[in-house]
Length: 156
Length: 156
DNA sequence: CTTGCAGACAGAATATTATTCAGAAATACC
DNA sequence: GGTATTTCTGAATAATATTCTGTCTGCAAG
Image (cartoon, each protein chain N blue to C red):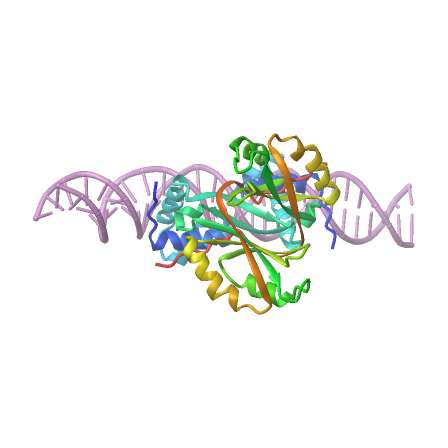
């Protein structure tokens, strides 16, 4: 299960993380390798699920998704967090992230909607209907200063 | 500043959001358009900053980033959240997100590190040295059930 | 030692794609 | 209705992706 990555793999990941649409030819030039060799490595990284996918970052405001909120969700059975609750949360498209967290609250979710009234609708119509949710505590984001899913690639 | 997107743009965004490396030719085939027309639209979406970038999703565990945490940060000057504090937070590579939030706490940040000791090191060496930070409240993620930065593309 | 095997790579050949451009079609704007 | 602007198609060309063959290397079993 534990995948071994050498320095070349990390170089590839670093560049592809910053720009998923870099051409294989450019990548090969930067690494001073043949395109075929680089392609072979990328394919293997995909197979090994080191690379999980390629996504386009869209400006949320341009598609009318101006509201971002984090919601802490407490289960009705104290510290018992059933995975079915997590699945129900994850099934909501507006819910971008579902994290099972340490402490009294069971889950922390990240939600993106058009505006605050849409959020309230979602909480009323979707969240309240999920069993075992005792309470929610919502944190509204006023302004996002930084948002990147880029990880720190280790150096060898 | 407000960008107008028609249905074709949204179709492009939906497909590229799910797979940033889809070829322009495939995209054109799916939309029954000429590749040149599709390319023109994608270029414009980039120029208009609707498309902010393309990123590769890497399995964090495969590069030894097993710990995820959210930290609430309270400013020492009560509700006054200076933007310099936000900039200092954003400058830390392990800090993936910095959100200015409503309420008593100023900022909510998302941090990814190798393990808990690395997180504590980071909090001691980096966070504590930022001026105007009064207190921090850390929430450790035990398990991430869902994590996608994909937005809900509206339908016209 | 050497034989054999497996992984990683280069280089070439071919299939596919990206990109550009001219002009046609559609749209919006007086 | 006419004109300007945008958006599109189709073809040509440049560049790229992908496949394949063979080489080289490290490594391990005999």
